[in-house]
Image (cartoon, rainbow, N blue to C red):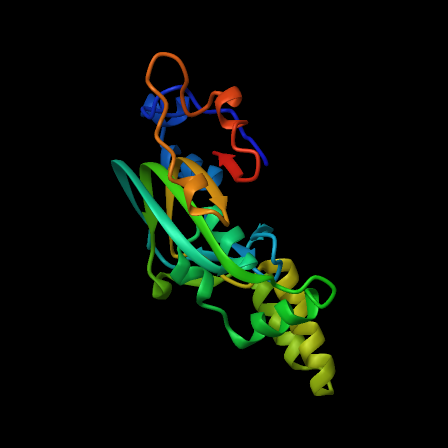
Length: 228
């Protein structure tokens, strides 16, 4: 069970100062930087995605991402059939994104999880989201950064197939397996468990206990709980 208790009591989360005051020409740049925009994600780990340290792509010419302000609260229960799917959905990934895996990534998943195979079963994740912004771009508006492009070209110049594969794996380990073209910013509450009854709880009455009340959340002894 893990907690990140940095959210206010209600769902009307105030914007960070650089977003709220609307001053300066770097408003969108600050938002994109905080969102780790255009960084790849490694998705070869069963336990969840890992964001790359460096940016893997940039916008071409004068292309800019679309940043849309939102005010939307939603709750859904997502059913998953493997431990990997559950962990990624718990982190906010859509089930469609989790199940979209290239052959390169599939081979890395298999190699990295030989000692800890992806368990199968049925899990339920109750995801409540308070969405504030959506950021999206088009694939044709992006170009790889020169360092990533050079790493892939160097990998493909290796003399044997085995060495090519290993060099590509190293590049993906550094720059990521996938690059999201659309992300949402806001806050969320996720509860995951193999028992449906444990995620179909009634929300506490207002005034006494709220989402970020650790005492209330600690009542769920077996569920995996995350506040972001």
